[in-house]
Image 1: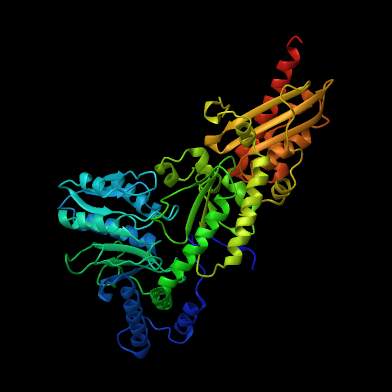
Image 2: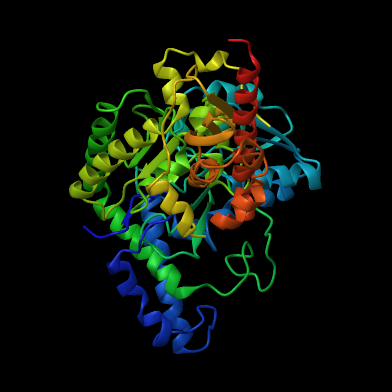
Length: 405
Length: 128
């Protein structure tokens, strides 16, 4: 086993060596600008980009012409929301999204509210983190121009009923954007079947390079138009100017191709390891709680709250294993996870949560090691915890008068 | 931003972790913080005469909170009640190299010290 061990694959993934290999020629040898139309350097770069477009489009069942390359899913989310709102301003000024979206969607929506006077409805989620298609339907007004709901949540792994939501959007004639960053390459994604009109995703979550992502923009049924947020040369059919990062795109393409080939088997393997991790921890320790949907969740995700133990201290205790937590102490803003809060999980349990993200390069051995270390560390920290002591004495912590400052 | 070495040291080898019985003679207990905040510290002192002869802590919180309370028990042992009351959170910050975002852990530790001292004094004043 190699240390430190990496079990934080929702945050980013290591590049697959096969992906790196396909990228290398495009840095030093085939370094042309894909927009140079008049020489072989440009033509070979363009060919590489178009080939990657095909590979990426195949994974999501889209047409290659429907892909706009961006710097990543954050930019794609920005482009989708701002681009649609701007383009369809005459039609309306209302956007529907959910409370558990990634900050790239939430902060963009907030910016649209503040700076452009757009009205945004943030739909709640149920206790498992799922958005209700009925809530979407009921929130639609005659001014709604966009619905934006994520495919799968990055913290708790819950998979939303995208197909139903897509159907409602189509019925009501409203554009449907899906932030599919955590789902593409992990579960089957079909923009036709799911009724998706715009979709964000990125390379670095699927063993590709950081710095490149895409926005799928539907061309038929309906033809979606978006206003660009970056001007300057009109690349990507005027939707996103700027020289394309050819080597990154080549890597993105290869990463998608590998996912297409390996996803079925890989998702079964990861789900088995994840189930083993879950059982190993939850069948041994008491007062541990699963966050997110028990079955409608990403195969490689696990999110557990360990009562009476704070998340950052648990991470410190297993610092040879890379994980993440919903604790306030681990966030830049000192706020506990807003996703867990939206589920109705109490702040104390939000502070006690750990997210595990398995990936292509994790092994059964690593899972067994992690189970052992988590159990050891939680046990040790509970010995150190005044809350555990009080709970064992039979004190109901909810009735205690805390002297918080 | 890797963890500070001193914080990790206290975390791996906490000083004086544990509990005295709350109603034991000469024991003062301070509990500060709240579970919703992600920080709860319990600091206990055992006093003989006017000296703190022993101290114990238990903490629910991040590594810096654990280290701050562990350090507090280390510093309190052997001090008089008055001296212990002079321990400032800034001393803790300096000793553990706490970054700005973790300063509140040291503040909580100082509060816990004061709470333990107050509790001891209150109990000492009660008629037996």
